[in-house]
Image 1 (cartoon, one colour):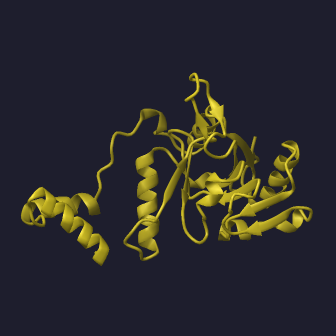
Image 2: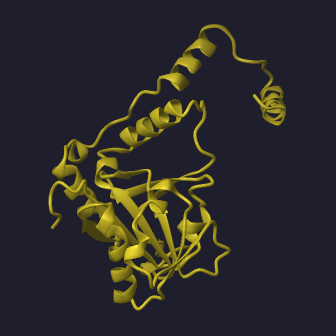
Image 3: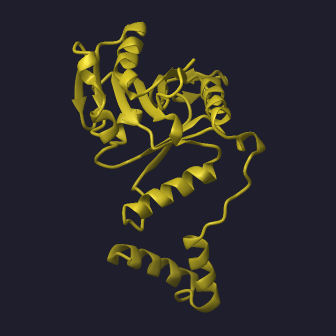
Length: 234
């Protein structure tokens, strides 16, 4: 535990009039942290394969996200270019410096300008790579880090996300378990600093209970859902 964190927790314990948790209580807490139990899993998310993908699409589109299903990674750059042209957006994106995105065949769209890194809010379109998709609610899970600046998720007017179909899980509990295993495989004992769960574009209903998109973040969320190349996507 870091010195600062220890001081904060120590101050809380003193204000509560007790010392550090010990004995059976401590063992029970450590067991809960190292082996978290899943909550209730919605029946609608207990699907496999195509059923999961179809549910994800239905739920995401139900909250005004747009979906473009492509056969494989080779088709992603052209899908991006096609979307930008269809929305009358400039052929310029700010993208995460992510291995998945860097490996795309960008030479297929020579007219597209690409910049990498975080945004200061002056970019109209951003591109991120999702760690997982959650079919239960049509949610994209994105991780912060050098290859996933959080500013790309919230500051541009249009946010585009690349999500492999194989990364779609049924419920939130499965997504968190996938993330814990991912961190463990990397030799890390902690989660990323920030995990963003994005369900559709930004919205608010504060004014006369009328839904307004883009009030506190992107006006558009466009998800490019990528197959494994074995089957033509519809």
